[in-house]
Image (cartoon, helix red, strand yellow):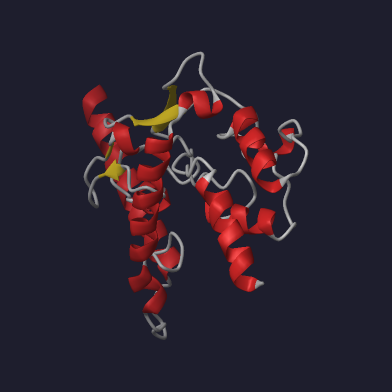
Length: 212
């Protein structure tokens, strides 16, 4: 029974767009697929899949097709993240947040988005401390699966699996999770805050110098 349930969940996962956006209320597409298979989630909670995605899940599960539940979002054209490189402070928070490693950059250096790998999940937006990431419409006039393809879904899924392998504890780097706390030493959150504050100070100084 467990194997049958896992097999069913895998088939459901195969029908999802693999944007890993978490808008469905689950940590990733497989988490949502498992919840559907176990009867704990509706088939109308995936905005990136849209109406066509609901129809696919309806055929697969035998459940009636419902309108997309608006509390999970709306079906819209696919967007792509764009970084204003002039304001990027190189804090690396967006690198950890991106489920498909579509952002390229290193600590204290500006980052950029690799367009072909961006799923439009928007997870990089809330973690940016300087709001230098914007969203641009990538597929005007096309939404849901009309704005996405099985080939893109497969590529995004593979990249997400690689990302998970590098970050087994979620978006927090495994090296930070594994470290034992040292008495009197700042925790990971404090270290990250100090890095961001220092980067912000450098950005403000650079902006001031430009105006002078």
